[in-house]
Amino acid sequence: MGTLILLAAITVAAAVGLAILFNKLVVKDFPETDRKAGNIKTFFVFIILFVIIFAVLYGKVIADASVKSFSAQIEQDIKKNYSNLDIVRNGIDVAAVSKDTNKLNNTVNDLTKIIKPGELGVPKFVWNIALGYMRKELQKIFNGFDAVSPFLDERNYITVSSFINGIQISVLKIIKITTIVIVSIFVVLFAIYVLVSLSKASKEKKRLENK
Image 1 (cartoon, helix red, strand yellow):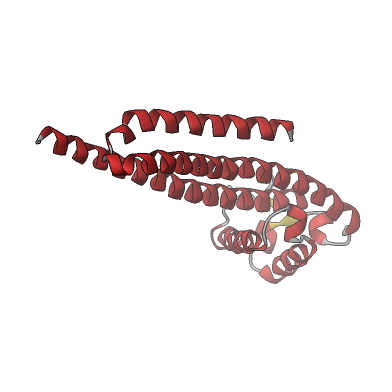
Image 2 (cartoon, rainbow, N blue to C red):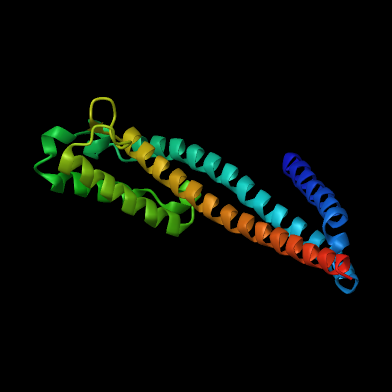
């Protein structure tokens, strides 16, 4: 908690510092009637956007750590409580069952019922996307025997460990993409505000020069 507060304080301080600099370099050239409001708006925009971006990035760090931690815990729980499953006892030889996917599908269905999205510390929609990705990856394994899939171990078996690893990679990938999209949106909004402000200041300077 102390680290979070410190990082948040640094983020706000950086936003305030840059807002002051922006006001001195850009907003000072706004029309006089808009200058005061522009100064206030700059502080508001810089602080809000910096805090949101910080929150998203920090949230990703926490989410990544939670997924990795819970993945290890769930793997141990499955091995302990569901030792009757084939995938737990011996793993599944992909080459051996490539022509009979029913066995694998049944096992995968069992595992996805055992693992709950809340246990991984991820929202349900992320879990649903991850499951969709997982099923596509497994289908690729059987269609083309993809030996580099994260769902396979070094023997080209699907085990509990490799299965959990595949899900973990899928979830982390979704979290990463979501983070990039959200941060990109706010960076674009920030860039738009800066460009609009620069344009406004430039027009006012030209107007005064032409007087």
